Length: 364
Image 1 (cartoon, rainbow, N blue to C red):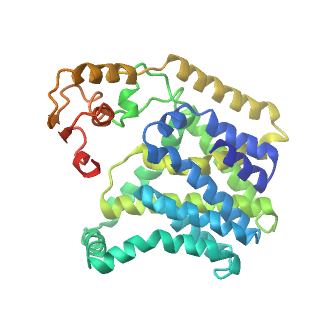
Image 2 (cartoon, rainbow, N blue to C red):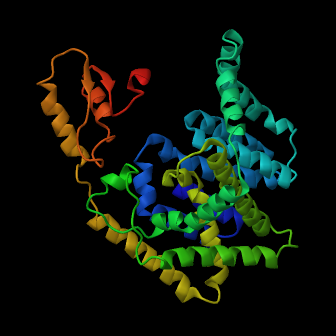
Image 3 (cartoon, one colour):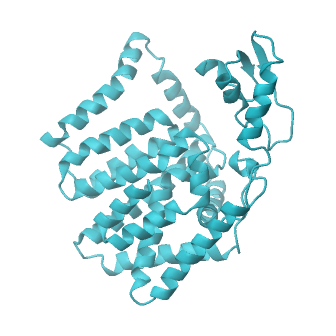
């Protein structure tokens, strides 16, 4: 992901923009932590960065990159519903930048899309309604929700107010000797010197927007690239808010993980705009950011590291009879939902039912 962000920044504007954006992502403690939290989160930023890279190439009339876009979009929707934003971003970008929808260079990409969708299509034909009926019911249920203007306005204000803080977690998170709770989304992390990181994030984003407005009549690759990034970022925020309103989604910080490459590029370009006249401030921001994340890395830990949990599972292996059993974790909130189901599977124990992971019997 770090390397892809470098390529995107370099392709849009310069090597320096590539360095700034990749540095922000690569040195982020919380980004690295989330990359190791769950395999779907691990590939989320990579697929987003590759999608932006391919869309930028397509806007430059390099249509063979549709194959890469097809791979990203088709892989995304099969991994996690959170990735549904990628095809939406692609469609909006095609419309906004007048990218042709029919080109012979798209053939391989179209084949990939059809191969990816064919199992669902065949399954629906063989078992009518198995896929479409639940989806239609979900949409019908969301349409039946009573939506009042005032609550929606309040939700929008709350949503917008949370955005700078959510991204500040990625760039200036406090050390924590019990990161288990944060790692498990039970507790919200703390921010260093809040609200200074939020102010810096808003300022850099504003610098980027001011540059776009200043050069709005330009036809340069840089202007088009930054506009594309802002467009995709806006589509992401709008889609997330609409999903929260329609389906009543609870607030989860990890929903924003898929958009991390976008915000890194936006903030990096904000630093790029101030680099010529304020080099000291630019490198000062990067230096402080690096020191904060090194400090967090050095002074953070888990209360229950993986090695201790694996040791416990191996000890229990000799005490559990070789027959199906039920797994139930009785402990404080930080401790539960912490991978014991998977560890028992790796230990080749026949876990029949897990209170820790309800879907265990499905993927077993």
